[in-house]
Each structure stands twice: as structure tokens, then as C-alpha cells.
Length: 574
Image: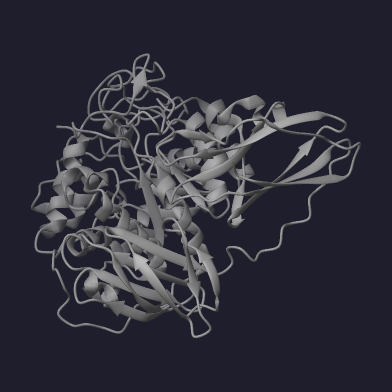
């Protein structure tokens, strides 16, 4: 049976009896957010070239702290017909359907250059359950991986996890096979060394953290032993699906690292298909499985979007608003999910040449690219870190609003009509761009503002977006530090770039255009080192959430760089 169905079975077991619309006892508002690594973008099933481009163009400028990428190791091949073959490792060489080792290294370097850390999905509980050939052309058997593992390296005698084991027998959950996947004996020193060697190789390539797949099926003592062999201090977050009254619980893994909070997404589905007014008390008292400072939270992931336990992109506005709430509310480390569109739950991502994943294209309808719709809220999340919830408002149904200290304020309308009222924002007087949509909000001296919150929409404002001084340009010898300042009004999810006639400005190729920062919105800024005494032609472009590009009108803008020093271009979109 396919491993996808194993995940579904586990998730459904976890759901049994666990879905409670509202906690019996309401507690005080959630505590302030603990220090966290910052929002993570999960670019699931994106190839390495696409991740590299996205780090440069979108994730870095938006303020995402890290990107989680798919398993980089070689795996059994189903020729691109399914998504789950990458969760059946064949060996630890970096010859996956997402690219080779060189492409992976280049991706890590590009993300680091953009200020984005890289977390790799690490599949270390098991090897394969079927197949005989990998994407890298390697021949293997279920218990025979030449040069790596033999039958002696797997749990023996073999046994299969039964549904009843999750409640009755934690030993079997951690030592038997997850629906036929050959279960590594992680108690073996040799196996531990092989796994640690693989993870350390990724660390040597610059990987900053690991998402541990199927951690629930590995004894925590074994994971701790493997962790002790790792170089440096990589950030660890573990997949431990919570199930009511199960023998293996997420809390058993918090000593190793952070844990994926699966209850969080289930609660988001309950509320955003019900009444979001209850969220005033949202926190661990709702039955969340680990405390805020140990939780990686998400509205959905690649498993839950398919098994029905959470919202997914097909829910449209409700899904978007749940993600807005996640990035605005102080609980855990938020992770925004972007995958590919699907009708067949088992189908693989767009691919060619025997299953190798093609470049992500946000304009062809095959990729959700949802992380782009959350760029403004990522900035909000970073701006309000460490502050508490205040000024709660709800209309008794599906409109809520709250502040985060004196740093940010958000209103969410999950109803079918717009709402206009005066809200207490808690922010200093001023005019702030709406980072959850278009337009702006003016706050008066009392901290109040008259705001229209659109139907199935949100308004979010925060300090620090418009008053930050521009950094002093760095001048490279023989270059002219050219600052581009463009006054551009954008809508939710749009980003602004400059592109021009020379290589430093992308050679008129939008894919190579230079991203501008929105920190001083509506003025977008970037500094580019250009050659001196050179005639420059350029334009500003908007990259839209669907991947399309909007060019400003003709004619091309032009100037000639001076012989040295710095220069600034102050422009307004046309």
C-alpha cells in the first residue's frame, strides 16, 4: 500500500474524538509570542532552481526567515506520476527529482544571499516499500541498498503498524513498518552514523535546519542520539501527528526540538467554517499538543490538504483569512504552505523527462504560489514579534479585530458583506498601508480609526512600514551605487522590481529583475551597483500574485551614471 495512505490513516486516527468546536473552559487571551525563528515558507515539491529564484525575488524581500524544501536525497522513482515517491529514500546522494547536488548548493547559496535560511525535509525513519530503481539510476531492494544498508540494518522480525497500535502499543508504532516501508533500526550505531552523516553533509552545504519526517515513528531516544552526532546547532522541527489518547504524543519530542502542531490546523478549519468570534481565547487551552515556544503551526501541509482534516487552497477566502490570522496571532512559529494544484490526491507535481520536476510557474495555474499572497502579513508578523494581544473586538459572529501591543492591528471579516466601523487600534497616530490588501488606514491621536473591512477580506497595519531610514549605499570600487526609489501603489501580494538594459538590471528579463523593498511603502527601494559613465534605460514592473507581470507605460526611463560615487533615481509609477 502507498505511504500516502499511511499518513491519511494516521491523521484520521488523530482526528477521532479530537475535534471540539469550542473549549469547555475559556481562558485569558493568548500569551505574547515567544522568540521564534520567524515565518517559514514551505515550497513543497518546488525544484531547486525555482526555490533559488523565489528566495531572491520574493522570500527575502518579504521577510520570510526560512524556506522548507522537499527531501533532497535520491528516492525510488514512479516517473513523476505521484508525489509520495520522494518519501521513499533509496540512498543519501543528492540526485532527486528536484535537481542534483550542484543545483541544491546553488539554491542554498542564493537563499542565504537573500537572507533566507534553508530547512531540508529529512526522511530518516525508513527507506522504500516498493520499486527497484531511483531517480538517480540506482538499483536497490526493499532491504538491500548496496553500499549503504543491508537487511541487518532494519527492524527484525518485521511487523506492520495496525490502526489499533496507535492507542495500544507505542513500541509497535516506533518499531514496525509504516504500511510496508522498510523500517530502519535507528537503535543501531551504524544506522545512526549513516543518518547523521547524511544530515551533516547537508549542513556542510549550508542547510540551516531539518524537518524530521515521520518522527512519531522513531523512538525519541534514537532521535536524541542522532542529534548528538550533528554538526553545529541546526534548527529541528519534527512531524509528530497528535492523536487523542495515543501512546505516542508530541510532548515526548519537545526535548529534541520543535514539533509540528497538527491540532492548530484542525482548529483553524473549525473556526473559519464556523464562527471566528471564539478565537479571542485561542491558545494551548484549546487542546493544542505542545506549548507555543515548541510549536511550528500551519493552516495546512501536503498531507492535511489532501486528507480533509484542514482547510486548503480550494477553500479560497476562508483559507487566506486563516493564514492571515496565523501570521497575526501569537502562537508558535508560523509556516505558510505553497504546493501545486491537484484534483487527483496522489498526482505528482508538473514534471518532464521521466519525472523530474519542472520550474514552478505561478502563472500557469499548476502551482498555488500561496506564499506570495502572504508577503504583507509576513512583514506584520516580524513587526509585532514579542507583543501581546489587546483591543479585541468581535461582532458576535465572523468579524474580529485585535491589536498586537502598539506595533500592529488587524481586522478579519469572514462574512459575505463589508463592515465599516471605528476600531481601537492601539497604534500611534499616522497613516499606514494595509498590508493585507489595498489602500491605507489613518489612525487618529486617540489610536482609533474608521475602517471598512471588505467581505471575506482583512485589513492589517503595523508600525515600521514607512518610517525606516534608507541604508547608506555601499559603494564598490569602479561602480556607482544607484538607489532606485519608486512611489508605487500596489495591492495585496504584488511586489515591485526594476529591470533595464544592462545585466545588473536583468537585461530586460523580468525573471532577472531587481526586487525593491516595501519597507518605506508606498516608496519601494533598492540600491544596485552599476558601471560608471554608462547610458542606462530602465522601467519598473509589478509581479502579481498569479505570476503575471505588469509593466509601467512607455517610454523607457533613462539616465547616464556618473564617473563614480552614488546617485539616486526618484520616480513615480506611470
